[in-house]
Length: 325
Image (cartoon, rainbow, N blue to C red; front, side, top):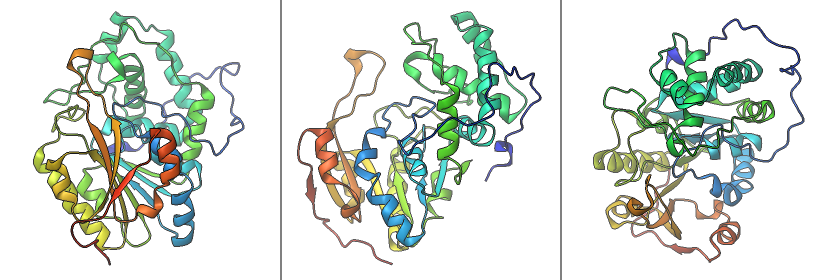
């Protein structure tokens, strides 16, 4: 766990009329993620939100999401009472979650102060070039930028600097206090930190569920300075297979691509047929079907998944032996 992700709550002048110190009524409905990420798997929540919490209640295991991004599925599971382990190589995204978890009212109010100072392009560019000194301020800046950036993207250059242009068509909508509280509640028992996928996957063991949504090759992979390569894709599959051998349930989302499928011959293949779209301009968008690879297909509610897809998912048997502990 990285020390610099400790949330340091800064002294702020709180306005009683704007900030409620009493959490609003919360539900077990999946909270809306604070950030928008390309390829978010929030649509998978109905297919997993009943089976996985029931399984983890029996095993007393944890739900791992090592490529968290917006952490849409981890938030879904947290709202259902699951203990979650949420990590990502992008430290800025994890700072957002850590700040919301630790101090939702302070975090919301600090964000409101940034918004009040301006949300036009000049304000955005000034914030993009600003380097806050504390993890808390970095988390506020990150959410401000993510809400105003083009298509809601988070992209960095080779030096790790955020470089997404201003979103002229942005809705400029920022989360309400209630939305931040809902995320905080879903993260109540969560571990949130920045780490590479190897470190997090290595922690999963018997009784745990490990959901992996690694970046898709040929699409958007520049949300960290290191990017994501073919070697990373292959290594992810190796680590996930090892986790399955240790007794973890593994669920992976991926393109339905032979170049990827060869790494998951040990898993069941659930063909989705859903079209995944990634690109800024319509003429440059890439579309292809997706798949779920898993060693426990019974934990995927195919009826709920089929209702979303408007088609019955096809489950193919593994070509090799399913790993067991």
